Image (cartoon, rainbow, N blue to C red; front, side):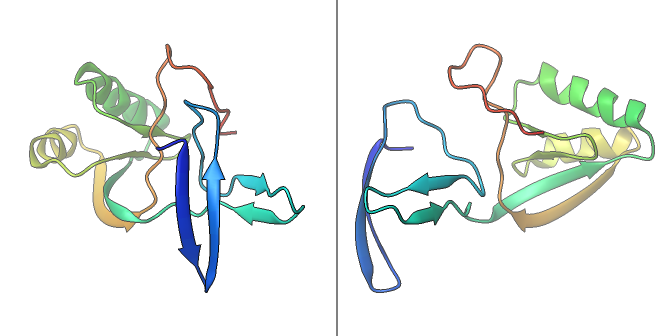
Length: 120
């Protein structure tokens, strides 16, 4: 994301200036200099959502996806990644459920990135 950006929404115009490297997440709140609160809404995009019958099956899917170094959203109940037919086939062979959807996608930042954000 750019650290400076000009937006127009609902007939209003505003500028956003954040420190370099700042990452915004779906439902984050920003406070304007005027005191108004602005909620961040992530734009939906094509994704693959992975669910499993057991936590161990989901963990195995995460392991195999991690070995391929793909951006991955990780939660206790699902994994989410960008569409990829090869990865979709691999996941189906692992026996997990794979659904193509259009939803906000917020992959993990990675262990070595600055600004770790707690998703709990």
